[in-house]
Figure 1 (tube, rainbow, N blue to C red):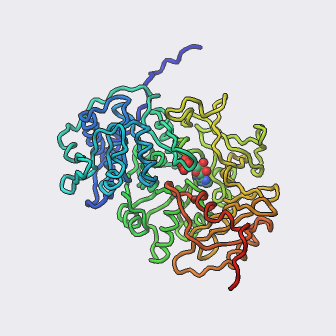
Figure 2: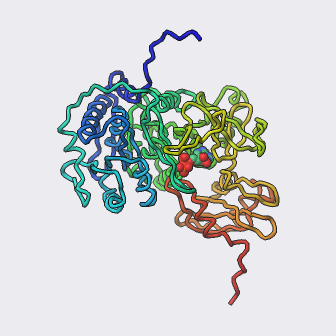
Figure 3: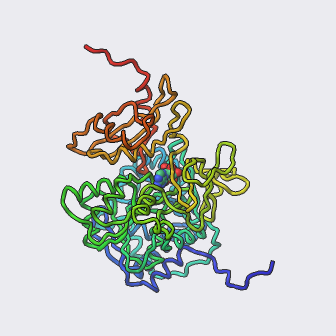
Length: 545
Ligand code: ADP
């Protein structure tokens, strides 16, 4: 090898903010807070307060490699920690307040955090778990002094601590492979597992996220992340937006239609993103109010499959493009993004829409995809044959935090637990999670395809499909429908809607109407549904009276 002669400058997260403060210093950052007025500053202001936050963390004894936990919503204070903690060489563990108390405490103990910073309306949660926290020495409430409440944990006040600190700092030079963010999977099976993102992974992921083949931000964009900052760093938007000079709008913890619309309209939001349930609420609100979504041009949706009807409504009714993404905590999280290509465009507008509305996304530089059959042989890339989805690349995990064994095979492939098809244009379509596939009479039925078809039925708010033990067919699909408020949708209507859309043997044997439970990351909680309806096809029919 002949060594390259370029500068071996490490990729550091803080350099994204340093760049934004210099190149786009007056571009705004706007944040809704829990019960304080809307906060407004710019990237120069964010850089100054991130420096203050870093001094504050140092004063609380946080040093290189130490873990600190945030328990907060999408606010500017949380964003400041996104730069301050990794900037110092510490690791920010972004705990998920929607997990069960025991799981929140488990992740903080597992991370061995010394400081816990939390939003004011999470004080009760913090007080409940405090007795079980083994390593936290200091609690900080992310609040102004006026509304501060030390609670039973003697919390310090974020704004008071910050005010005492200088607004400039000499950020240390770090190893780009140092840990920066510790994000836990939501632990739907077993304890949550920690994924420790490195500076290098986060920076490369942010650069890739900004590309035109992914989110394609420009300094004229106004980006509002509605995916949670605590869930896989809000899909990297807090890094990709400043890296491209886009204005950032943070919606706090208010994701209802009216609150989102207020910001979308007042701040000129052009790009937003979040899980499908948020957009179901928003579309329902727009429809009920007869409003249109201002300057909004694109919505990135992922975390679970985007119902085709949702993408279609956004486009046809409001001329907003939906970009579906697929990813997971283990991939930082962007895996694929559904963006158009010339090869598709050449097939005409309808073919293009069809492809990007019905597939999870297209191959992106930086993450390789492969599907394999039960014997580990590559499945054909024909867009039809499903296989276990494996991924590999510089922002895919190698090993879970504090797990001794590797999480990947000898060639670095990580098994995602998803089942997918790949096609020759590089599009990937998830057909199911391995554990959710429905096995009926030896054949597979895709719960995602059924849900997608059912959710387009008028009156349906959420459609969930689970495989339920069946005396004859091993498993058969059961469709659980949560209807929109006031909608009068019936079993017969739903089945009549599905009949022309799916193979006859895929039709669910029954439809039940119930509230659909969601997990802490906004996915349909199929474990709960299976527990509730597990004997639906085997129980004795109710006796007539
Ligand atoms: P958790 O911690 O709940 O596992 P993740 O966000 O890491 O949370 O979940 C990743 C999983 O979410 C993927 O493996 C996949 O099953 C599902 N998922 C994410 N995006 C999509 C999508 N666009 N369509 C279908 N499933 C998706």
